[in-house]
Length: 485
Image 1 (cartoon, one colour):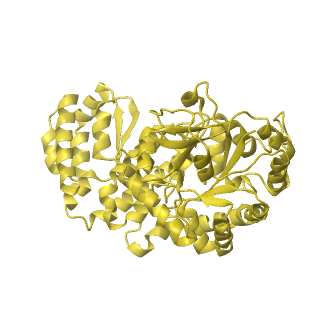
Image 2 (cartoon, helix red, strand yellow):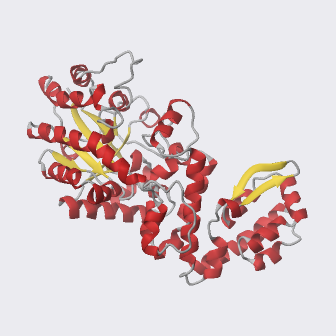
C-alpha cells in the first residue's frame, strides 16, 4: 500500500493596474501603487475569508491528529498577508511550527525566471524565498517546487547545486513512458517527486463537476482509490485555493478536506512529508527532461505563459529589461510573476475557460497593460543610467510607438516593441513588406524618432536588402548593449 504526500501551493500575485497610464509626476516611492491594482487587497481579503482562514484551521486540527502535509507559500502572498491579513499569517505561522508540516521552497516572486537563459536571477529569487521563510517562519526549506512545477534538466541541476534535497514536478506521460508516477525518481542527480495528475486533478478540477461520472466525490471513495493504487508514494499537490475559493463551501469541499485524513487512516494509508519520502525511499529510475514541462493546462509545458506571440514578446522584454532594473529591482521582479503572462494566453476550450476565470482582464488588455507598465518603468530608469543614449535606443516602447509592419494591403501581423525584436522580425516579415517600408522611409524615420538613434537611421538609409538591414542593425545593437551591460 502506498504512502501519500500532500502538498499545497499558496500564491497571490500583484495584479497590474487595469487603468494604468503614464504619469511622469508620480514619484519613485509611489510607483508600486501606480503600477499595481488596488483590487489586490480586495482579492486577498476575499480569498482569506473564503479559503485561507477556514481551510488552514481545518488543516491545523488534522495535523494535531497525526495528518502530515507540506506548504509552498510565494513571497508575494506572504507580503500580502503581512499588509492586509495578519490573522492569516498567524495561522500559517502555526502551520510552520507544527511537527507534521514542512515548508517548500520556490521563487520569491512565483516568477518565470527559471526560463531565462541566465539562471542567476532564478537562483537569487530562490535564495530570497529561503531567507523569507526563515525570517517569517524560522524554517529553511530543504525541498523545492518551481513556479507551476516548471521543470527541465537545467532547473533540476540548478536546484541540486543549491543543496536542496529534492524537487517536485509533474508526472507527465511523455517523460515517464510506461512507468508510474507513484515512485521516487532522480534527474540530474537530485531526487524528484512526481505529482499524480489524475488523483490531484480529481480534487482540483473535477470535485464539483456534476457531469463527472464519479460525482459527487466523497472522502471515503477517494481514500479507497489511494489505498488501492500501486506504487510506493502518491504525490497529490494542489492550489490551496481549491478549498473555498475555486470550489465554494457549498460544494462540500471543506467537509471533504476534514474527512479525508480519517478515511485514509482507516485504510492504512500514511501521510508523509516530502523530506520523509526522500529519506525513506530510493529513486527507482532516472528521468530525462530536455523539453520544459509544467503542471499547467493539458499541454503540461510552458505554453500557459509563452504560447502565443504576445506572451513571447513580453517574456523577452522582461528578460532584456535586466540592465534597467538596477534602480528598482523589486519592480522588475514583480513584473516577472507568472500570472501576468498567464493572463495573456489565447487558448480555447476548457484551458481557455480556466485562464479566463483567473484573469482580471482579457488577454489583449493584459498584454497592452503589461507593455505600457514595462515601457514606463524602463523610461524612468534611463534617467539615472550611465549611458542614457544607448539605453533609450534599446528600451521597450509602448504600443503607440512600436513599429507595426505593413504592406501594400495593410498590417501583416508583426509588431516590434524594441530594436532587438525589430531585428528578429526582419527575418520573418514578407519581402514586399520590407520594400514597402524602405520606399516610404519608415525604418529610418522610426529609428531616428521613436528610438532616437540618428546614427543607425543614417546607417540603414538606402539599404534595401533584408540581410544588409539585419547586419547593420545587429552590429549597432550589440555595440549599444555593450554600453549599458
